Image (cartoon, rainbow, N blue to C red; front, top):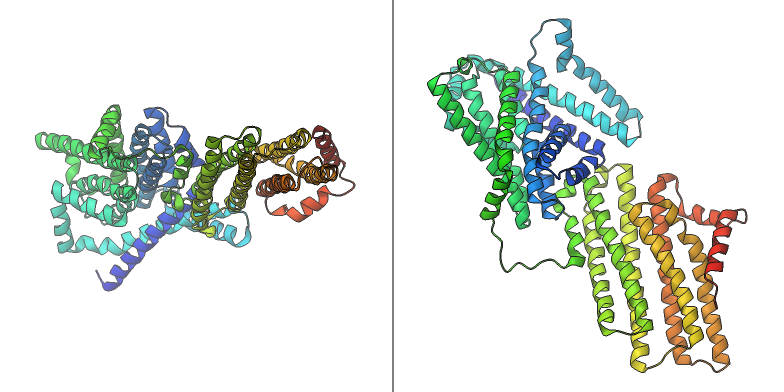
Length: 590
């Protein structure tokens, strides 16, 4: 084996790993976050969890990625440990599909049909299609398809390059002597653990083993313990993911480790005991890529069938390993949704943005609650409610900081257009929700000032403010619901209400001046009333901003906010004018 063979082997490995990454990334983007939502929702029974874990992993071609997702879900409180156990077991089965795909490289030349099944035959066609799509298409979905095609082609070419480069090793005695040592079950197991732990992918390490098998120098007595070790080595990624996470997240990563360690131990003991009593004839034969895939699949299926009934036992074992700290305090309920902002989801932008939207939806609800609590203070001032307004406003500030910081860390290049529009909308809206809470706190301070100074509005002024605040309340309700439900119909109701709120603001101030001239009101109350009406009007302005952001997100690049607002104000837009007239009639001053 020459230095050029070594370089070709290293280059082939690099192409193989890059192709696998590109293929998995393309598949993950193609899913548009749907796979993550499936993981989150369809896991209410152990069998369903196994099937979902198996299906998702077969699609994204990485049990490590699935397990890291699961650890993130558990860490953010979305998923329970019992659900995680089933998904992890299913992920181990799903990842074996990769070894079957890689086994295509080992098809021997024969009939035309078999030759067509070889990646070297159809790979160039996939590459041409993929490059063509990237060069001439601007659609994200097609580009993701191109990534899948090119990733698969690069992966298989890397596989071929590795296998061709190591073929001369079959005639090197030193190489075959090393492999003979790995036929020792313990050493083979250890080699599989170390190889997989280093490259952090059981699929990739199995692929490397399959490439070595093509030399004809690797027997099943060597390959089998290495495969067993690869199943344990893949746990390293999840274990790293659990570092610094919550206790339940650490337990999820331990479930992955315990499942593979226990499953491997049982399988190895049973297999070698039977082999000692009645030796398996195939153990001395040269391993093939499809033989490797078969062993890989059989082990994971058998391990799942044996351990699935004891999944609760695995959860209990993980719970014992990571005990509860009695000093741990439960997270404040209002801040709990911030746990959705899981750092592990950064590698999956669609999921990270989806979780950020979920946190922002909680923030929107809190902003509405802050406003409602502040309004109640004008009817009957209550110190506890006033403190709650201050507390909520502070919590909403934390939401804005944490959601904003989380989203700006995402790489825009890894997003689809839909994800990019959603990210922009969430970033805009959290600022508006934070400002709504600020204005609600200002309303609380106005109510507090009136309480402390023992001053109050006249009955007429209170009725006018009630009409005004009800219009803003409805506008905020449409805003929050439109944002949370992605409903352009609800969002489109905000702008006509904004017109009415602006008119009410002017009318409230004009009526106050009339009362002031008549001596029915004081300048001091006028300042307070001005503060209240200004804050109500500005809350309505921020509702308008959120509604426009929702419409922009739903309609994409073709939506222009300035053109939209200009279109609404046109004389010919009778639909908008009718809506404004309807709300004016609804919120007439007494």
